Image (tube, rainbow over all chains, first blue to last red; front, side, top):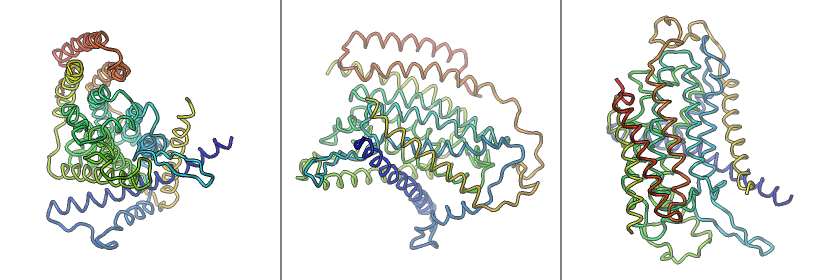
Length: 353
Length: 118
């Protein structure tokens, strides 16, 4: 009973910290997006709220909360209300299975050593399956938002996002199989542990084709340019969120940015060695399980995450948007057969070695 | 075994609670001055023509149907991929045959134009 209580308290604290960081992370990403886009387009970007405009995202959130929340007359009120809740809830829940560093051992006051895992439930043996399942549920948020608004733009945006996300989910799932064959586990911690040591142990060198397929598909899953057709501003105004205002619009925004972080984290965990340095971490001379090593690993993780996010934002302001038929052709006619081919080739190579 | 899923349940409750509170706050904090024009749907500033319950392209349904077929294929492959090293060569050949059969179906759909979008 006491153990159960302790677990509940531990998970609650971790959950609160995690949710805070997800929301803060979304704010940081919004700021980065605006600053980097300004840099690329030769503008200044936000610079009024706080030093270097750092408080801009917070000002935006307060503004969104104070805005009027409009229900269109024709909308289905319940669905219209709960679509952003689904989107944002799923975006937060996905983080439950993500590990951020190796477990840290802490000596308690009575001398017992307690192992603290960095994450809510990172050792869950279905980690990747859970994330894939949750991203599938995430489609409901966008589709319901588009359908329940009863507006033509929203409906088209919702349909487009549903078709796009399920199409690219396939190639994403198939690309992961190559990694799973090498690592032999669904648990994200195991997959990262498998890649430790020198940087050529990272899965990107073992699975270059899977990496490319996964990256393209995760761009499509995140609804980022060049695949941002669900909200293509010049064609669909805002797509599924046309009829949303106030913080409900902001919730879709938050969900989108936290999905962007999830996608980047998956990319890092599956292909870039997670929290491991590009050289054996024994060289640092830090003890396994010590707090110092945990901090170093978190820093490495954060650095990789920022690099990938920078890359994603960079792509947004460099590459033009696809046409919808091109998008579908790429998903079904290129990536799907390529991903199947990748499985066969990986299997044959693994048997030869 | 099932205790491992316990943090997950807490996290699900927690995540949706946060989202729910955000939604309620958004409804309570914002101003409420709905006018008739404000509550019509956006249609480039014109008076909306009908509503959005119209027919749309059948292609969206086709994509959904193909998705189900191939998604089940992916789910079948996962358990095999995890046990790949232990299982050895015979299941690998079986999986190759499985993929080949699905590929015939894929090729048929391709030739029939089911994957064409215009």
